[in-house]
Image 1 (cartoon, rainbow, N blue to C red):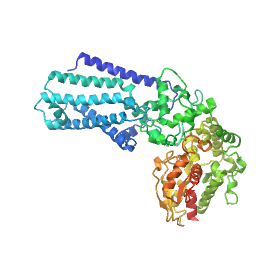
Image 2 (cartoon, rainbow, N blue to C red; image 1 turned 180 degrees about the vertical axis):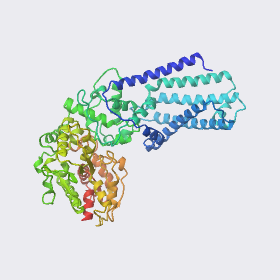
Image 3 (tube, rainbow, N blue to C red; image 1 turned 90 degrees about the vertical axis):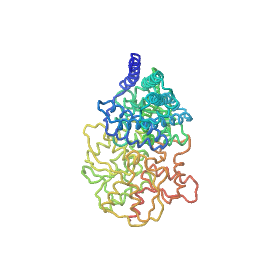
Image 4 (tube, rainbow, N blue to C red; image 1 turned 120 degrees about the vertical axis):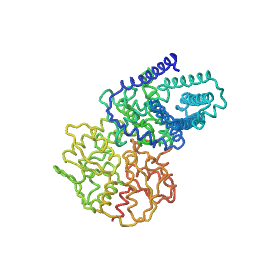
Length: 624
């Protein structure tokens, strides 16, 4: 029987809980605006499927036990309150199911407690010990209540509550003790409800909300800069409400840093630390600057590879926060690595990262029968976006020529942009120079509109990602829409439609290095493998870290122009992994990856090293 004290404590617990969540809501309300579109159907699929969580077998299994051990009994108990009369056998069956699920729930909670108790992690897991211990007490007291009830009600079906029955053998048939245990169980539940917003259990509410409003589409595109306030973020209030919701939903599981190449290689960056620091600052009354506890070395160690985004089970997106802090460091504070300044100056003065100038941008195509987009020319079938590397880097010019050769053999009508093309702006934006990115983007968009460019093929995944995912977010007086295709997709399409056919054999063992901005950024994995499989004799073998788990070469996020002085070089780690695989050729589809892997493999000092080739080169040799 519920007493007045019970009702008071229930109301108090709910009030404390609502107050705690209101504090979170108030924080989000004071943040910058951001438009997000919910995906409620995805939430249901995610919760039932547990795909990302189960990628780590032990923690995933424990979470599965706790999740279903909690949710299913709640559903069953709610359904049991309906005024329908159930047959005794059905009621006993439901009781048995509740007992079994409760045992699984308890087992998962105990193992979670032990796992976090022995963890050496200094960034948070031990903070969850108290709420986990409280959860274990709730479950155990629930079983004790069932046990003492069975010791009093002797005619109940034993099989319907096996755990309760075993406990009943050791408990006295005392109605007073039963009331004490039931009250203890109830008060522990109320205590957990009251503490939920102030412990990691808040993710039970905030994580589903964050998952509903997760970013739709590809991961590669960055959030646009807010027109309010200074560029970037250095205080909690400088972030959008969605970004702060992501920090509140974080459970500090550490999967982001376990996947982060910078962290793995011994650099100071921890994506989790960045997220937790933002959460701590937004929850504190002091509006201290974030750069007071996160160093610039940490922020500039990021290669924007999106491994942390891929790994996060609650879609907290640490990368977005790092980019916001970079924007502040670059535009608000002027704190940028000195070695990056020449590249930025080259972009400002010449429109390319090499400082060569637009007049030389089409020189790679001389004597190749390549047509350049002429003045007033419009509605060309295909436009090749060469990119800075494809136009100026001596090694990657070979890849541009290989693509041209394939298109010519397929009889495709195409043009290059030549002097009209400027850098897409990706290096500037990833380093935090949003103004320069916008200037370059607007220049290119005007040119696309003038020539009514409708279909663009790119070789560089960074150009591909920027044109496809970020240019549509640029506000221009006359918006122009166009399709962007990566060269691997288009060449695979040509083979499928039998415009070309690889016939010359490649009797070699080949592996694939997935570029971050092609793979994790845009979910393009199959064309690279499909192209290799289309070549007679080629034997494809996968690296241990491939596809979604691929390891970054170290050049993204402006890393191509930064000194990697801290920790082990990422290209050295990846090159060792490739060399140990014993392959003849490593294929990639990115100028940055090709450069970094070539340097890394040559630096190993081995007698026999694999060739580093772009997949377009390999296909061109096979169809020649």
